[in-house]
Length: 340
Image 1 (cartoon, rainbow, N blue to C red):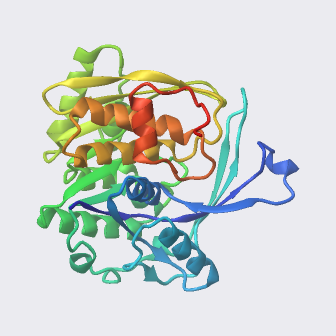
Image 2: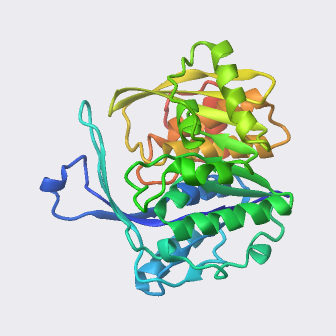
Image 3: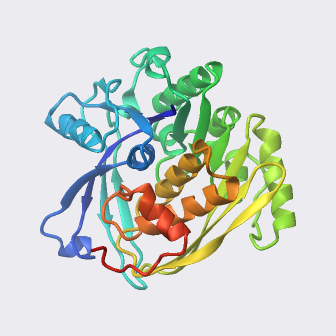
């Protein structure tokens, strides 16, 4: 049986209601979420055993976050209780031609100050078949980056399949290091990567490129450069997003397995309810498909794209869909009719 362990930061999300601007808000809707945790939630919804590891303050707010983790049927037995505060992000949801806006308030958060030895990775990764991390965690602080590397090395030594979502956040790399200083050492252990080609090459310290995602032959050469720098890489996927407006997105995807490139049908998503977490939904769908022995690579990619599309229709960070709902979209059922 598969077991996925994810490591990262869970945040308190404070969002305005009904597409209000920050200046119009009199209160905020409180939820919790974070890239790696969102992936764990998706997998738990699909029936995959999932654990989430993080560091949280030992106070009422930290306990609220742990309760939310457990409510979503994700394991929380190896969470470190330390530090002074939980990270926060404020969300103003856009509409039409006005894009959404995120403001981070996560400096000096608990996970930013995590210390070596607080997590016993041998114990935390016991029975795990997969380990998931994202580029958000090493962007938080030097401490978080070092802990992520310890986790990745332990997972590699144990023969655990390692997945990573590049998740470049320019607002987070503020502690004196650039992605090219940190990410190559981490990515060389990854078996599965989700991300844009240009982002991957940027993080690996390579020359800037502008990929043409319609030219599969040229894409293959660019993916090969990434493979050369990530010796354990088996599969890389890229989410194709064409933003018509904040309320109308077109979502597709590409998957490369070192021998061929597969492409998924691009789907329209309108109206968009909440875009946050849609990339994590793609990642969760990708991992589920790769874990499922009944899925070939094309079905895996189609499942990931469908999961991403459905997340746009759900408020909050999590993709609260079942595998049956995602498969309905894969099979072409996009009518949205009432289920009676």
